[in-house]
Image (cartoon, rainbow over all chains, first blue to last red; front, side):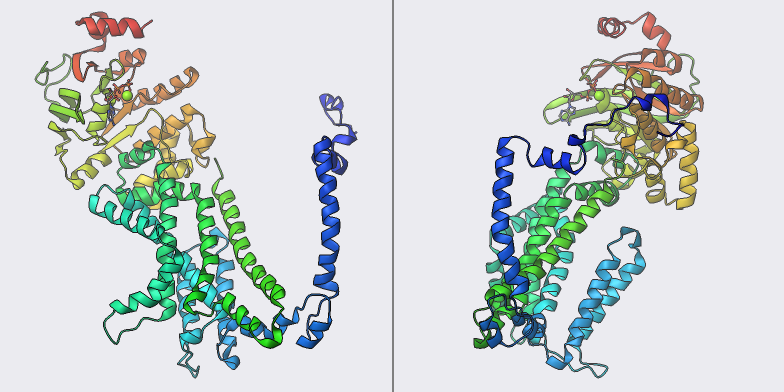
Length: 364
Length: 258
Ligand SMILES: Nc1ncnc2c1ncn2[C@@H]1O[C@H](COP(=O)(O)OP(=O)(O)OP(=O)(O)O)[C@@H](O)[C@H]1O
Ligand SMILES: [Mg+2]
């Protein structure tokens, strides 16, 4: 006891040891009642049966670098399917000796993303950095200048393609979805009808059929001689599809706003545009962060559907490796690897949204 | 019922007119809410409106800054007629401050940002200047030390004073109050009324819907009594409370005074 401790603190009694610390936690959470105790024991038994063999398969008996033959003799995982084919899985048919270009583009993208994580850094300059960065990435990929050989977009594939489809898909779908949600609540009947029809039509159709429509039917309507790049068509389909779902989520947020907020904004003279931008949307969008991020995450994963129109995204390049007779049969390892990549993408989105929610909830 | 030509005693007939409402009707769908309102408010005049629930008090003052649209008659605000013209409506809203029963502060902005939103975006005041103005007004409503808090962190009385300050930052010519104290706990009512009394002392033109009869007596030039969408009676506070002329007014006063 320190001498200056106030008297009333002297009388405070520490809780019994069995209620605090690790022992307390274990008692309270794992062995609290017979049902809980039974469940805990069952789960411990189950884990003890599953974890060690899995660990052995993944890390001890596994082959990290080696030929397919070595793999077939080993009893563990054959990670060498990844290490031996990594560049094809990541970059697809992009010319082998030029693959530093998509790599550089991806690094730029990750750099920009991590710079933008902190909202305090959001500024005009960062906006320009993005604009410049995206252009630079496009030039890097496409080439055809400064001595860089031109690479047709039909050769683009793997992770850069997946990232391209999702980054543009999500960033374009979000504002479009907001506009659609505002349109659906508009007092102007034509705009409202247009938005309702759009949203309901798109939501009534699976993404796969939109992708097919984009790649097969849409070109039929174009005048002869004009072709639109296949990636662009898939991109547009993804944007249009995702925007419809975002719109409905945002509309839910808008409906949650009280009339008083609109009236207060109007009564200090804000017009419709400013009312939305400064008062309504910041609140409504914040409320709907969790469902919005769900949509963005599923849109990210849905980009893998572009395999059906023969684009070589990450999933398709992996499958191509598996169809190579040498590596046939190691699909477990390959799918675990790309599952991991997708998980990293989705998890960082979920993580970011939680961080954002926390930051935005100050003072409430 | 037509009282537009009456000049209540004690006021100089040469004073300028601030708000003129002539033969104004308002319907909600089929429902006739306001049935021929005639009201002239002069500059620096302070009016208290009372009346039973559903009589149309809120609707009347909401028509004055066009939160509701009237269907017949006219409303002229400082020379600008309120018609279906976005420019006019925006100009009127900039000149009329409104304080709501439920404060309606913007919960995602801190107090200072609540106050500077209008000046910066509507009046195009530079940020620094707007913040100086906001701090000055916050001092006037005795709440400057809370400038960086969020509305959710303040008590009801403090929030309502912030709401008043937010309107004042737009430098309005008229302030409308719709039952500003009726959502407050009794101990907070006084702090809000005190701010309103100070405002009155400075010569603000005010229309206040309230049942705070003490406030009406000490501040109002005229008290209006509304019932069934009409202004039934209007008089100076003294006369209004001492000698109500109509049965309905007497009944109402006997109800709220006990
Ligand atoms: N948006 C609306 N749509 C339809 N009817 C409405 C609407 N707003 C108000 N009313 C009706 O109009 C009448 C007058 O309402 P108003 O809010 O002006 O009354 P009030 O005198 O302010 O009453 P209170 O003292 O309860 O606030 C009421 O009968 C109310 O039900
Ligand atoms: Mg009311």
